[in-house]
Length: 332
Image (cartoon, rainbow, N blue to C red):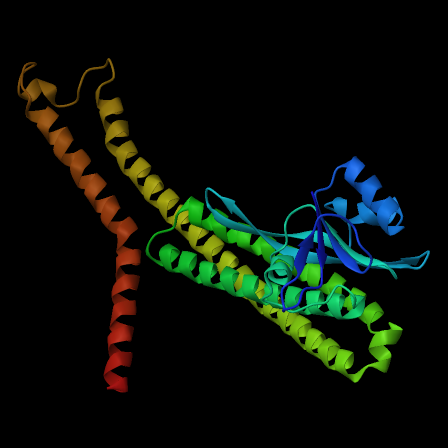
């Protein structure tokens, strides 16, 4: 899709039906025919225009045939059944003496703000345009990072009451998003370093101030991403330990139950062999006295062993409660 914009009387840009000098050409998931059309109109090589159409394209800069290209990674929020998913997509800003061209596979919220006039930009000032875009893009990263942190806290609050596989998977997805953000932000800083060497920025104090704000916002986003990533990683390790402990407790309980059931089974197996039963002759072949006696002995032995196996955990729990009560009394 191709859209043309020119400077308007107010802060908002005005759409144009065709290409005009000093305009902004916005390409969103363009076809090959649209790429060829824009390349002829703007004298920009097709390779530059197609650079951002690769989802795996890294942030970089390129200067060729009077054209300057800056490819940066932008945060993308995608809706899914489990909630919002966060990722990044490359976006290219290309300019020469005649126009500005932006290329991306999906619509960008920052460019939408340019179109609606929320952020004031001019099509006849490429340096101001790209500085404004990169600054707003860094702020967009900060916004997404805050959303990730809020969602992470909400999921962890739910996990505090009950561990669920879906919640663990959501945290894993958020952790992956933070990894993508961290990589993209570090790549974007290299592009910012190249942008600082542009002659127009070096000579203009106004542009220098905007660039300084850009560096501050980007560094803040990098630090926030690192903190959130480390915090989430520690939380995931903690939940992994909790799940492992729960599994160990379950296996311990099942082992105790298996041992306790094996005792009466073993006694009944020996007593039920096809052999004469001891002491049966004292009460007659039809007497059930010894049958009840075997049941009683089996239950007694099982209860005694159960007491021995459960004695240590119970005593430890009581001791811990006693220590907590002593600490609370000292604090009071």
